[in-house]
Image: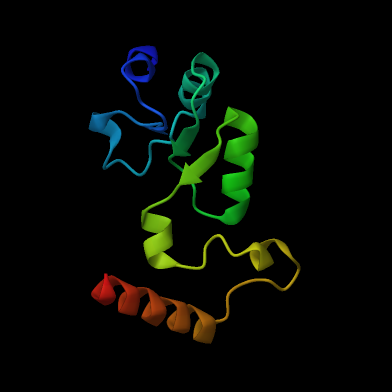
Length: 112
């Protein structure tokens, strides 16, 4: 990671699984490894792996010290995953809201 930073990288995304573990949903991302990379670098680092809820994003950032998180599959299932209302009582997604967000997401995909 330091070599990548020295080569001019200004932002690094780190996934906490190896290539062999990529398709194994039973394997948890290793946030310890992500934290070690963050501690070794002076550039912003984004953590990826096991971000399934907004609370996971907060927990991961606190644990790893990373500057942000990435999420793929969970956002495809729920485009409003990072809506802050999710952390409030009664903030769970309503089916109608989920459909509306999904349609908006698909319209944006077609447009861009």
